[in-house]
Amino acid sequence: MAISHQGTCLCGTVSVTVTTKSNHVGVCHCLMCRKWGGGPMFAVDFAEDVDFKGAEHIATFSSSDWAERGFCRQCGTHLFYRLKQNGHYALPVGLLDSTDAWKITEQIFIEQKPAYYSLAEKTKQLTGKEAFAQYDQQ
Image 1 (cartoon, rainbow, N blue to C red):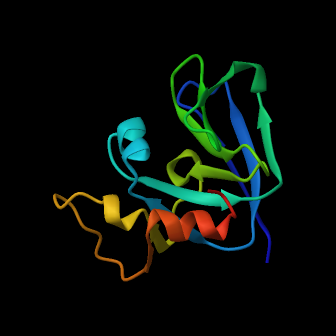
Image 2 (cartoon, rainbow, N blue to C red):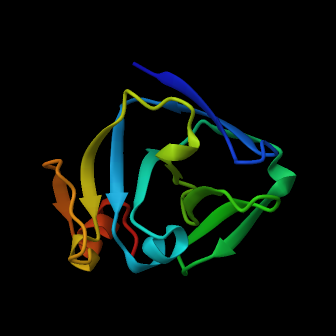
Image 3 (cartoon, rainbow, N blue to C red):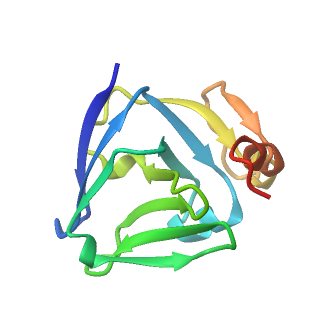
């Protein structure tokens, strides 16, 4: 069942509407995500149906050869992680207004997770190499 979700950046300059087919949240423990957000990224994946309003206020940073990160130019809110090759988006789940239906189902870059935190949820756990293999990115 497809569900539509809306969200905005902190200042409201950028809004997003997305459609999901599940309530799954993935957690990325990679060094870049932790530097970017001060902790792991709790993300929802979207391969399509991502509609940004106020896109002229979105800046992107090419964080690797294969991906870029988007943020609001006005307030700095993290908006997305996007694969360059196929346009696959991962949005921080906290960006979206709906909060109760989400469930953490997967953790990636588990080999980079520092010892000072752990999650109580029992999830699928993938290394970075295994995660890249899912998206045919190397």
